[in-house]
Amino acid sequence: MIRHKILIIEDNPLNLELATDLLEANGFAISSAITAEEGLRMGREILPDLILMDLGLPGMDGLRATKELKGNPVTCHLTIVGLTAHAMKGDTEIAFKAGCDGYLTKPIDTRTFVGTITRLIASKTSPVATINPKQYHVGP
Amino acid sequence: MVNSSDILKARILIVDDQEVNVALLEQMLRGAGYTAIDSTRNPREVCDLHRKNRYSLIILDLLMPGLDGFQVMENLKAIETEGYLAVLVQTAQPAHKVRALKAGAKDFVSKPFNLAEVLLRVHNLLEVRLLHREDMKRTEQAEVRSQHSESANLAKTQFLASMSHELRTPLNAIIGFSEILADKTFGDLNARQFKYANNILTSGRHLLQLINDILDLAKVEAGGGELIRDSFSVSKALLEAESIIKTLAYKKQISLEFCTASDLPSLFASESKFKQIMYNLLSNAIKFTPEHGSILVTTTLHQSISSDSAPQTKSLKVAVTDTGIGINIEDQARIFEEFEQVDSSYGRQQQGTGLGLALAKKLVEMHGGKLWAESGGTEVKGSTFTFLIPFLNAEPAPALLNTRPGLSAKTVHPLVDAGFEIGASV
Image (cartoon, rainbow over all chains, first blue to last red):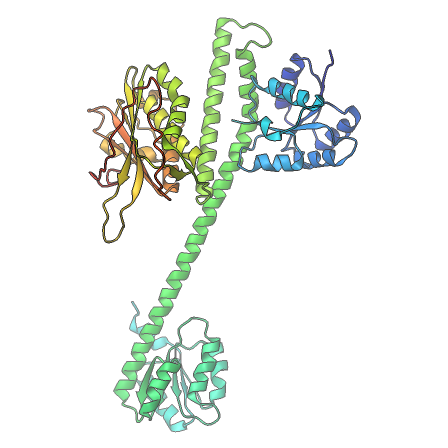
């Protein structure tokens, strides 16, 4: 069985731990970064199956980091899921415009979180799957 | 009111090429108590002087060599900033009077002067001028005040939005970890640990609901005009609201009955906001209704009585009646305030954010409607929350009503009720 690689870029240690524990418990191989710069470097090195990107990072924010990853031919194919505590209207559009393939709002629902991530990876790795970002918008 | 000492302090400019006229007018005005009097015999100087001194009144001769009084008035108009220029013209020719008034003079005096008349006209003009100035000041102050309150409101809204955001981040950990514990994802818990984990989870979710409600309120207050309307079927939306709320009612064994008129046109409004209004009113009703109680939702077409001032309008009228604890008359307006719950021993038992009704009211008002509560008080038991939303683009829609199998809804005949004043009880 392939262990899918996930890179989590998140500056809040508890939220990082929560996502890490949930995903590791379900067989994913997790790497993490707490700044966008570190995340960009690791993204290029690891080429993970999915990046969980906190959009509200201090310094370079997740939206800019997403744009950079999507603009780089080495990393443009990576699946990126934006994670944000913003729940304002229009945030979804901003995230997809930046290049996010999916979008989750905090607090995450631990009961559906892993399933959502699994589906996103499956749709990206399956050659016939078409990506409809809207499908993965999960929010309260 | 203008007091007379202000009138006497007003700056006056006398413009006349005849030295003797200037002297006469000046002497007369000083004699009457005026103190700030300038004069010039050169009409070309008038604009510069006015620009510098901003006269309250200019007494202007019409016939002067070089530049006549009509041209002076034209030039003055171009530099006037306060929108009101008090010019009193002096003329010996009756034909000039109308022409001067047309050119912008506010009044005239005839030569030779009747001194008493000149003084009275000067006084009257200055009074009007000063009143105008006071009025302008008041308008300006009101504008400044409203700008201040607008920016204060915006600051409040932005603060609420960013606060909600900041609070969600730690809540992610609180809800997430307690959820994992309660779900026993990483191993079993004993009964007490399981209970505590669920307590944390319940409180965390309650806090999240509060934050969401605050954010919703802030959004409504920030962008009142931001309403995306669409035509939708009221009965279908009610059905969807019911399906969301059903479990809550079921838990307390409260019967939930819908009574919907069959002649409702489709509503041109925001469907999601309509459902939110229904959800908030219904969850409020369930919250304050004891077990085995009942809730009735009556939806009708409401027609206002036409009057001279307002034409007849058709509105959707939805009334949510419960058999709950009731609301005292004096509390019936207060419950729509943010964070208010009537402080009865029963009410205090009720978990809630205290924002649901405030939000429902704001959402109804965004649609140009009204929401109010009626209750016979806590002695009688039971309350009715009613709202009206006017039909826009009201077109008859196909009757989609009461197609639900197995529900106790009964069809109400189209009724016109104008039985009570809208909002009078709020």
